[in-house]
Image 1 (cartoon, helix red, strand yellow):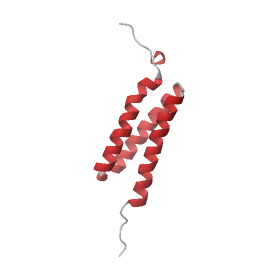
Image 2 (tube, one colour; image 1 turned 180 degrees about the vertical axis):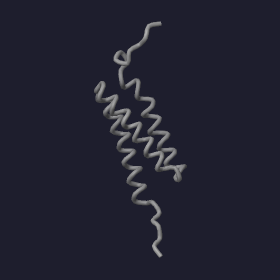
Image 3 (spheres, helix red, strand yellow; image 1 turned 30 degrees about the horizontal axis):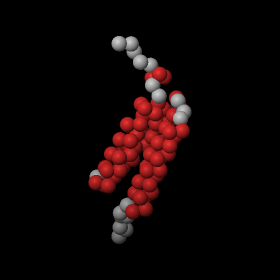
Image 4 (cartoon, one colour; image 1 turned 90 degrees about the vertical axis):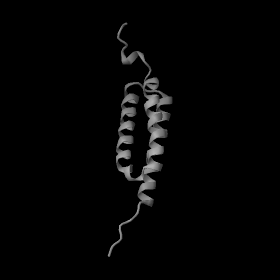
Length: 91
């Protein structure tokens, strides 16, 4: 079986499942695991950076759209966390 080079496989097909997993799993974890939101945001940003690297290697409009949806989702989660996080009380 010959070795398949990464250039012969379209980058969208390589990154579509990990990025979809990041969106779906990240949304679920954000809603049901509020104590782990900080670590979740870090992992989602790493997934986004992986996608940006893939887009840099082989550009496509579909991959850009997928990255845009992930970035909007991360931004919405971050904005929700910053706006509705419990504030410490000053005594």
